[in-house]
Amino acid sequence: MKIKLKKPICFFDLETTGTNIAKDRIVEISILKLFPNQNKEIKTWLVNPEIPIPSEVTMIHGISNNDVKDHPTFNHLASIILQFINGCDLAGYNSNRFDIPMLAEEMLRAEQDFDLKNVNCVDVQTIFHKKEKRTLEAAYKFYCNKNLDHAHSAEADTTATYEVLEGQLDMYDDLENDIKWLANFSKHKEFADFAGFIRYNKEGNEIFSFGKHKGKLVEDVLQKEPGYFGWFQNADFPRYTKKILTAIKLRQFNS
Image 1 (cartoon, rainbow, N blue to C red):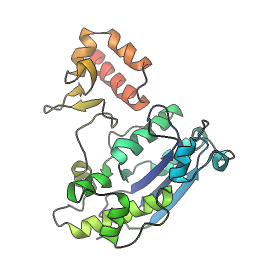
Image 2 (cartoon, rainbow, N blue to C red; image 1 turned 45 degrees about the vertical axis):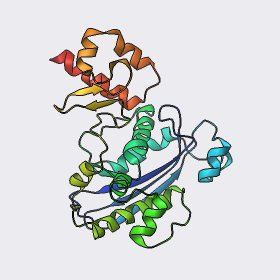
Image 3 (cartoon, helix red, strand yellow; image 1 turned 90 degrees about the horizontal axis):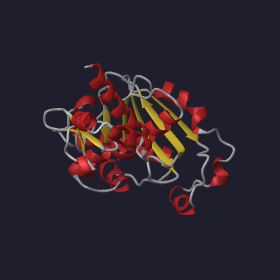
């Protein structure tokens, strides 16, 4: 089943130096842009992360320090990538928990104004896990009846993710062929920051989801403990999370 679109959607996958959103860096990004008329455009970039790629990570995705040493840094690519995905919804495999927070971190590190407020984010892995609970390779075999060759290369995983979502729409009659609906269905919880440090309660208010203030309203904590904001900004949290916290503080100040 072809995916119904009101605007373009970008399926993307990252290969990185590791899994720490705040510290690790992108080494490869592949984006498949699907237009409402079903035309597709795919772009892939190798990225010099400016930090070493651990050998155990190279064993997973096959990208070594030598492979990326002559390629541009993310700082040089950020505006090009942002222009390519501008005005699009986003989709990926485990993207809400990893790829999107990592991309946001790199964008903000490159001083790009990256805002996901009006972006629908479809996590194909979440749909798969809610329906079948398997891996991307198994999903590709299950929904597309094909073997996923070159798994853990960004372009192969990106293309497979796009095909899996089409297969999911074919298989499950209760999945609506609507990006906003799929984005809501593929959410784990209502997180304000994607990385999961700030989420929404049942009333739609931001609360902390960790530490001594877990479950408390963010606005209440910032009001009663003014120093917490400074500690948070100087601590090892993702930049996008810090951006969300700053927005809440500014909103509180303006009100």
